[in-house]
Amino acid sequence: MSYSHCAERLPLPTPTAALGTLRARGLRISTARRQVVDALFAAEGPVSAEALARSTKADLASVYRNLDALEQAGIAHHVHVGHAAGRYVLSGRHDGGYAACERCGRHVQLHGDDLTGLRETVKALCGFACDFSHFPLVGACPDCEADR
Image (cartoon, rainbow, N blue to C red; front, side, top):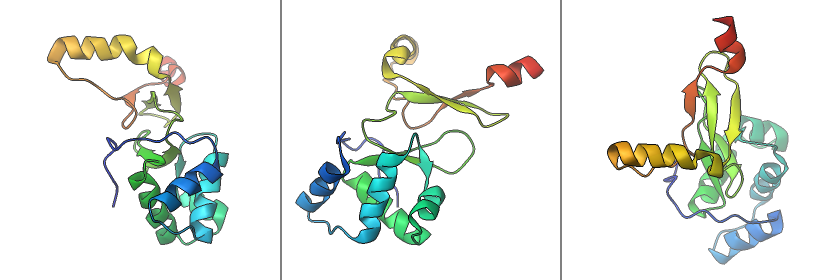
């Protein structure tokens, strides 16, 4: 079960800090949980549960259970970057958002400050305060648009 992407996010600097937060919330630190935390800290960007299972050699169901615990604790969150399965990233990393190409699947990170004008425009148009960190802005990347 996934938790709301609106849950308080706790950007933690190290795996040790993340594990300490889990302990403080009464959660056990199993080998599998430690491996998932370490793999998220090692990841360059959002990573799928399947990739985490491969890199940790853990059972996929166990990885999903641990990711749910990390989301509930505010340590990680899932994002969608196109039509693929959700991916997971540590809180405090990649919080701005993403742009995703609907044609080739390429995605690029957008920094929070870069989205300020867009947030203001959306708010002026309809009153919504937008958070682009969960779902990407979709369209065509420069290469796919040039090929069109």
